[in-house]
Image 1 (cartoon, rainbow, N blue to C red):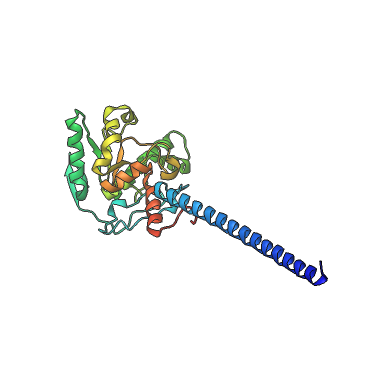
Image 2: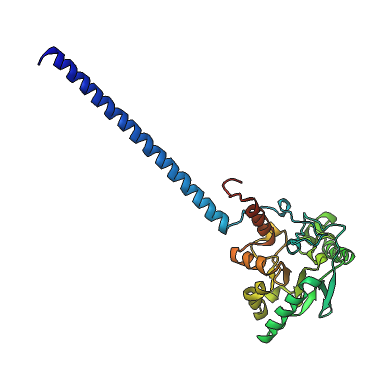
Length: 265
């Protein structure tokens, strides 16, 4: 082969190898980019699924807030009152009476319907408590603390133990008129057919078990099978579906409004 022909052949070979190298580099880059995009899409889809069906776990009710309890806004059903969140001093509510117990007038129709539906199944739902004034709540808390002091507890411990079952004045849902106690305020109520019926049907009338078993660290209150809270039919349905207590559900709603996934929060 002539020197000139050999030189041309070398150039062609060089160009060929260079082209192959560039092609391989481009292919590798495209493959890596596709893989990265695939992973990103998978993470996004997982986050969207998690946002749809789960609420963030709350370690304490102190980090959860709701709309003011003093107004008549559309969120009145989700008023949050607990050990850390106090009812507004300007709060007011229109009351109606059923079975000799006062409740928020806005829940009367659904409450009456629930009682009648249970009655149709041969079950009795008796209201033991509904709305309480701040003075009444203060008296109940002091009675509980006094009982603990009589058992030998020091004043601080007596009040701490009392708070596990009786809220301080200003921190009780009963002051909103949205909470009801049923059938004697007894722990044995959890073993009755009436309680089991409520577990299956209370949400249909807008009520939820306010202090469920297993949520004590979030609600700050031990399991109370007699204490039900009105949140409205749609909220009650979602809370039951997602197995959320009120503190968790309010946080869930807040995240939904902000369109923030758990991975971004």
